[in-house]
Length: 182
Image (cartoon, rainbow, N blue to C red; front, side, top):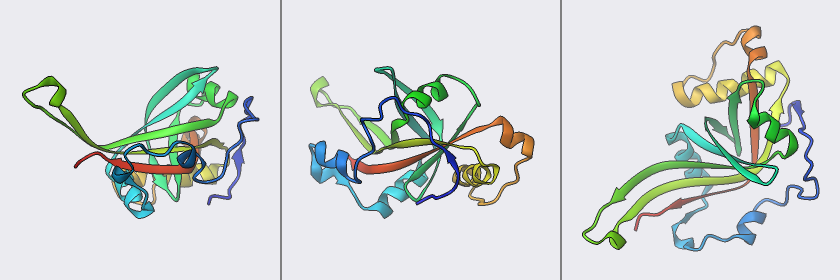
């Protein structure tokens, strides 16, 4: 688990504190549990195949979802964005988030409309978002993100570039995957 310097976002929903690992899974078990993937190594492999996640937030009770590129390592998603905007405003009020990734997707047609189906593999995680403030931690996080796309673990970032970008780390407390194929 990450232990570097981060900015704890104030959360007006403090009564909804982060629960124990697995809490969401216990409260909301997967209906078709035979399709559930719980092996962390398989989930890590799935997350290395995709490049876009959907970050879901709650904007004063209104759902708000943003597609983002990501890096993933040790139960944390690493995201980057501008230093201002709706996403950061929402996270400053409520940093509880959900991250969703579709890894594989295919539609299977059929003669009857009701017999059409979708085959997919997806990952969903529930967690807490943190804004990384320390330049060293930002650079390490950006390297994780860049490694996901380039395969290269080390990149150079200027001080100016690090100042111009906001880096978000989402620590996932619950994560699971689903393979809908038969």
